[in-house]
Image (tube, rainbow, N blue to C red; front, side):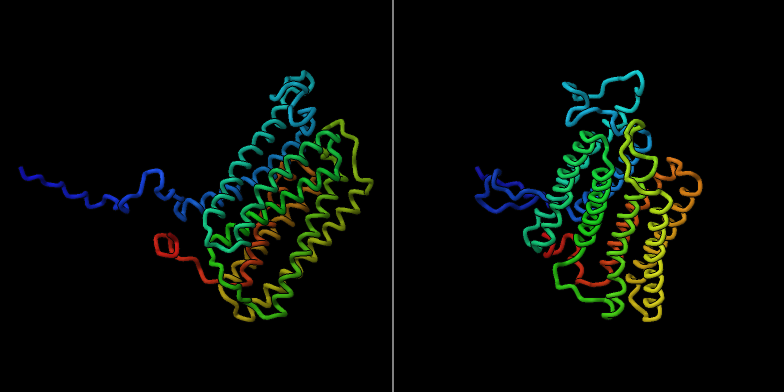
Amino acid sequence: MNSTTAPAAPDAPVEPAGLRPQHRPRRTPTAPWARRILWANLVAQIVIVVTGGVVRLTGSGLGCSTWPQCEPGQFAPALREASAWHPYIEFGNRTLTGVLAVLALAAAWVAWRRRDRALPYRLLGLVPLVGVVVQAVIGGLTVLVDLHPALVGSHFLISMVLVAASTALLVRHGESDAPAVPALGRRTTALAGALLPLGALVLALGVVVTGSGPHSGDEDAAYRFALDPAEISGLHSASVWLFLGVLTALAVVVHRSGSAARVRRGVHLLLAVTLAQGVLGYVQYLTGLPEALVALHMLGASLLTATLVVQQMTLRTREPRPVPGTAGDR
């Protein structure tokens, strides 16, 4: 009897002969999914800054009296008659840290699954994950020392580093590993580079302003920086004006020199965020630091950090990565 073999379906995958199921190549996410993971990591890094601000602004910083448990012998929060809702706000922020850890781990996997990428790119992918672990420890120590402003401030500044690293990782993901080529002349590049230390100064003085102000994170916490809030606010304001002056000069130079569109867009975006953040800062100061505006100002600090990184990364060009599905993205 003649036997016939049914033809393979047109779309059926063809596997090499002798390839066992357990030895088949592992699936990796497509480029769009990988990019979404990196976006989710960045958004989560910003969101946790805002939720951490909510903990402070609602006086819930010591809603959980210890760490890593919320109460001695109890992981979940316990109701306290005097402040029934504070433990849940603090515990909710801690829970979000777990979500952030998962996203940071996923971001690290996105970077390290591509062994053909340069080592600096893959190492950058580890920064959010390592940072989340460091932040968890610092957050616990902050509770144990009753919200000392120095530790609270370092907690915020490390978050800004993680926002910056997550932004840089997202940008680098869409680039090749070809050598970076400057997009501007030496003098203009040096002018743009001055924004980095000035931006760090703005953030650091903002932390000192908060540490000398009324929002400690707990109504009974007595720790404060021994500084005049009005004087340190003036210094913070001066640093913002200096940052804005350099940025405005850069915008003028970039337009006069006919720089690439991406360079101009980076400067415009940073200028818009800086102006909005500056206006918000003055409004919150003149209106007595209302909690809602302070929370928005913390969100603005995160967005300023992210847009500053984007702007700095427009100062050089690399060849784009291959389109997903081509030989270079297999």
